[in-house]
Length: 72
Image (cartoon, rainbow, N blue to C red):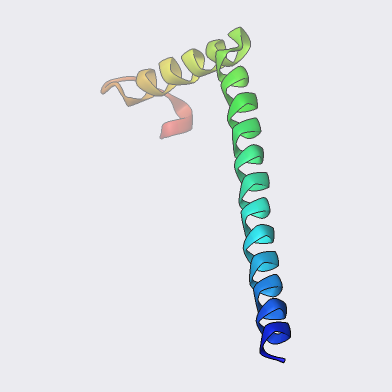
């Protein structure tokens, strides 16, 4: 009887550990894939152009003495 109980407990614990490890592996793979897509998007020339445009626009608006109706 003890052997059967020990075997059942061992199988349940092993199954729980294996399923948790598999879930973590799937999550890591999804993170790696997302980072790959994000990296590709940030390297794209149109994204870089948009970032440059936004940065220049913000810097221009932050300069003192710039008269902009939208900021008044």
